[in-house]
Length: 128
Image (cartoon, rainbow, N blue to C red; front, side):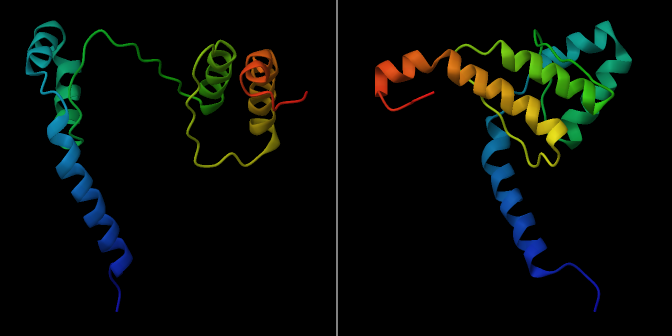
């Protein structure tokens, strides 16, 4: 018989439970959507669609950069990573080739070396 297996149903139920717990915590921001409607109806309609179907509210005073090519986006991430001073949060599902991982790894090593004096002073465990 063809159909969804139990694992798929379990995963769907887990996501639904997360949505039920977290989505009510998102701000409504209806005022922002009204302001956007007055400014640009096309963008407002796209934002309304995202709000209605993906459940993400409209925000203002935020910056977004769109990269039509993944390589451009990755290059921008590497440039921003070089600027990191206090905190780095990265989440990747897979980095499969050396062309992608090596530049990322080199920057992270550079940052560790740059701040190793602080780590050495605090923990006295790193040797470079």
